[in-house]
Amino acid sequence: MDKGLLVVNAFLRTNKFDELYTFLRDAAESEGMQLEVMTNAELVCALEGDLSPADYQFVVFWDKDILLAQRLEQLGMRLFNSARSIALCDDKSLTWLALREHDIPMPRTVPAPKTFPAIGYPDTAFAKEIGKTLGYPVVVKECYGSFGQQVYLCQT
Picture 1 (tube, rainbow, N blue to C red):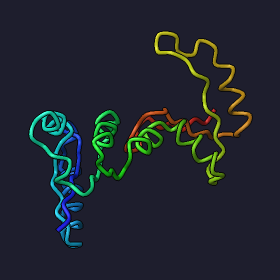
Picture 2 (cartoon, rainbow, N blue to C red):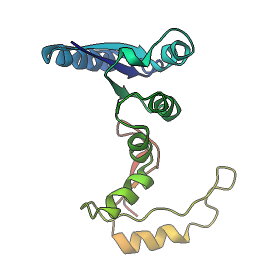
Picture 3 (cartoon, one colour):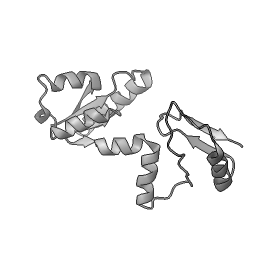
Picture 4 (cartoon, rainbow, N blue to C red):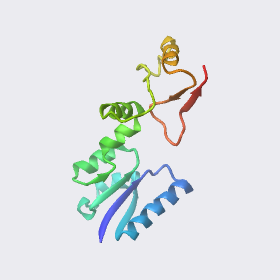
C-alpha cells in the first residue's frame, strides 16, 4: 500500500479544515493509499529527528509554508503541490504573470505599482487611471489573501 503524507497548517484548526483533512484521508484510503496527517509544526521537528522521507511515496502539501515545501523537495520527496506552485498561487500578482505567460484567459487585470508598508500610496492618481482603463465597478484584490478575504468591490 502506498503511503503518503498530508501536510497541514498547525494554526488553521477549525471544523471546516478538519473535515477537509478527513475527506482527503478517506479519499486516499478508497484508492488503496494510506495518508498520514502531520502539521507543519510537527514536521519541522520530525525532519530533524527520526522521520525518514523514504517512508512516503508522496506528499499532499495542503499549506502555504513554502520554506518547508522546499525543504521536503530537497530531501527528494514528491510534493503535490510543489513549492513553486504554492508560491505562484499564493501571490496573486505572480499568478497573473504565470497565466499571462501561457495565454490563459482571465479578467482584465492591472497590477498596482509596488510600494512599501511605511510609505503606502500617498499619490493615488494611478488608481483613477486603472478605473478609467477597466471601467467600474472594479474588483481589487490584495496580492496575499485566502478564502475570499482581502477582496474589495469599488464602485468609484
